[in-house]
Image (cartoon, rainbow, N blue to C red):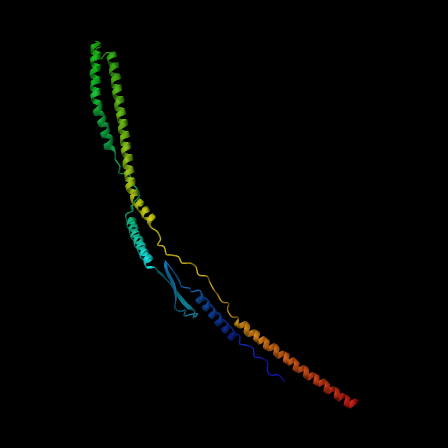
Length: 268
């Protein structure tokens, strides 16, 4: 009789061996791709910083070192951007704390001054016109209080009132112009902190880091440990079954020969 059948592999040990093989392959692949680089900009290097306490996987650290010249420029850029950031913080603190309010504009003095100035300029003309009218009526012998006298006086008064009305209207226009000027000045002063902040924000830029070329990735296929174990077990079982079949076949053949001989001896 043949020996005992091959013992079936322990599936837990097979899984453990397979997992260990894959972990080793993963660590090997990671090492393949931890390629250091160097260029005129600087260098990139890798170092193992420890081991993950849960999985036991190696932990890597990537460090970038700039060339001395580029590091100096980088430091200046960081410093200037830091100054701009501080200035932005100061500009934010100077922003208006309340909505724009132009209610404080008062142009009454402008209106009064304009009207007074025009009246001062018109008064000599009014006085000269009154003297001329009185002289003309006297020369023509038109008595005071007559219809003609009153009509001429009314025309003079109408012309004088028209001139004063125009002076008042011009005073209103002058006051409106001054109001617009003051409004624009107040608006400019109100918006100035926002404009300064916008200018600073426009000059604020992210500090750039030099880019290194990508590293072509390499990988090795993991070993199929569990497949190899089970295939080997299957091969052993196939051999065992074949041996068993051959053994039983031989025994059956011998049995037939013995039975034939026995039959021939007794009944022949």
